Amino acid sequence: MLLHKGETLFRQGESGQLYHLKSGLLKIARVHEDGVPFLVNIIIPDEIIPHHSLISPNPYNGTAIALVPCEVEPVPSQQWYRELEQNPAKCRDIALLLQDKLRMMQQRIDQLTQVTPAEKLRKLEVWFKTYIGPDHLTDVLTQEEIGQLIGLRRETVNRLLRAQTSI
Image 1 (cartoon, rainbow, N blue to C red):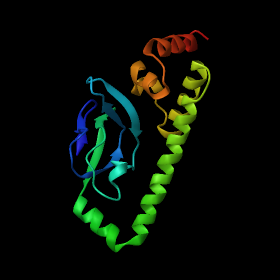
Image 2: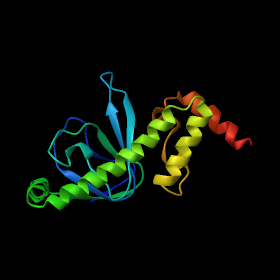
Image 3: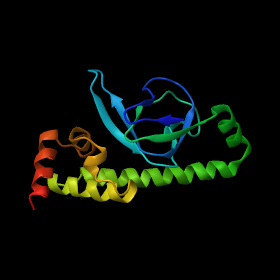
């Protein structure tokens, strides 16, 4: 299945199947009670999502939206969970996948604990280059989304990005 930039794969609160992201990038946004979305995760190629449903089914915790054109393959849930019961090695593979995702998220937490806004942005840029690739951060994310990832206001992100280009 192909998704164009901005198209939604699934919505927060719905229940459904798992998906394998073959190419592209997805963002996971949680919608607050006031209706404002908040970016909480970026999904990179070869991930199977939602992560919280890899062992047992649960409603989607967020809305998955294509950041760039994506190729996504639905994963038949009943077959997935049946294979888990029959193949313990698959459980180990999932544990390793979740371990990698946890390490990625720990680096994101490290970004949030930096003292200065400039250092938060610098660490996010390093993280982005490591996990997401050659595109520049602002080619994929809005200033608002960048701010959400590192706990800064959009205006602060704008000021920091402008300061980088003037160097």
